[in-house]
Image (tube, rainbow, N blue to C red; front, side):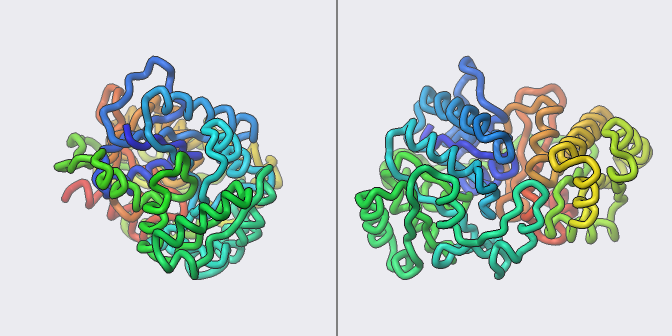
Length: 422
């Protein structure tokens, strides 16, 4: 194993996995902290997907350190802490506290932080994170139900979360290339900075940043900064050419989409899907009961499964989300949607669904847990950052695409199944 990754949610993990496969690395995603006796997968990279993004800080730290311990025992040469390209967190964490714990455990003293992913319109300039061409706090992320992002300045955001200090490698330095970036990070470390927010507005910047971090024990960021890592391993003679690193078994069966994300991108994808596919919308405000919601959804889907993909959505615009949170509380509202989605996924698979798209990180985590999925082999990419995967080690074959709420083109839900037919 060349790279061991700790991801703070499931869709973010598959996002990074897709990037690594595109770079020629055979990649497996594990769900949850691996048990000590789990055999090490035959892969160049192993990504441990946790549900730690919105967990209590102490739990997030403990699970991340347990994942690191397993990856160390498995022989990983380099480590990566993967979080969202929109830097989803609160002033209490969890990005800073988890990164602090990993830096301490690896005794490396320093790590870069770069969530940029220009392909999906996430860029960092002068330390400010832009999403879709606007500042993060004007992108809709300020309304996120669990991690509202109200400050786009990542130096400030991370400084409020960490016990260390945070510096910046600005655009003018990054644009000079690998050597300038490496020198700037070295200088920041020597001056006692624990982290460096690194600007990036193009893929070329990300490749240079990855190359500059070839000797770093720990890298933190979004999937984009991993773009340059496979080439590092090739230059070192550690990574052989793979014929088809994303090859997956063929799976027959019905298709379905389960959406729990409330992001603008997912809401637009649902709007498009309504004109092409049967869509059922859960109304958690009218029926705040997970069992009742799932029963209604599965009853609706009963005579539709198998003909064409069915879409079941718990997604809602900000005003409805706010109303549900006001009625139940933020945590209880989130738990209700996750529980309902997990029950629905279980029912869909029991009824013959074998190709399942799940939108939303928290929703994906709940679904994978309910279905007993522990390992995913990463395959072909649907849209940037979203691959199809094959759930290993379970009875009926199951293809899953775990989509970050913010990712994917407007026609993503239809495109996903067309890709499998190609």
